[in-house]
Length: 325
Image (cartoon, rainbow, N blue to C red; front, side, top):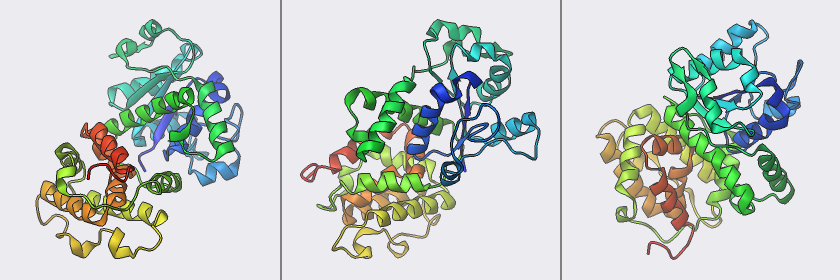
């Protein structure tokens, strides 16, 4: 699994970083944090939450430095949480963030009132963070957003505007992480819940033709998911989220893209294959097309291919029954 390693100052753990971690998890991300719920200075998560979301953490069979090094090597991306407190923990940014920067895994944010100009103080070897793109995240607003969603049961799209703005910043961090991941991540239970809730808002009909699918979207999927393994994984993830939001009154053949409807994966060029996939999906209906676009593996390919804006515009339009007809 291509997880996000969260690097931060100990002082920020519960006060700021916990809300950010919970937001990442709510978006289906698999995270690595040092002490989620045991040991000194931990995040305060209970074991049921840790197990339910597959949170990775320090390995009791390794030394602290060995466990950190192993996690950094296996991480798909490293989220550096810059702050006033982090400036006091030089070992963190010299070891963790230097590695992330030179290995092209670093995604950064500022989680307190640290001035942007102060990023220049973080410098280790050839890594200079002065030019790092680091949005400022209001972790208190993220906590309010999490509490609002827990109280109302509503998706992030329904958040009040100020809270939605902070939530979208985290989604942008995930998009940046996807550009750095060399492999897509697997489908989580949180992904299924989130994607199914969105699909439930998408009407099945009317059908679409290929003229409705931006060429940039097909190109991004073809480039990112050009191997048989990735293409198969994308179709499997698509079917899994469709099953969780299966429309009443339909049969599986009317919703799912089935293997016998497509050429053998790898038998034709990737662009031709994905053109056929979207052609078949359009004939199934709007919900099937949107499912292809919002799976974790689909998002990974679209974001790496710089086609996320076009894909999201299409998905949003398909939620409206009379659009694109």
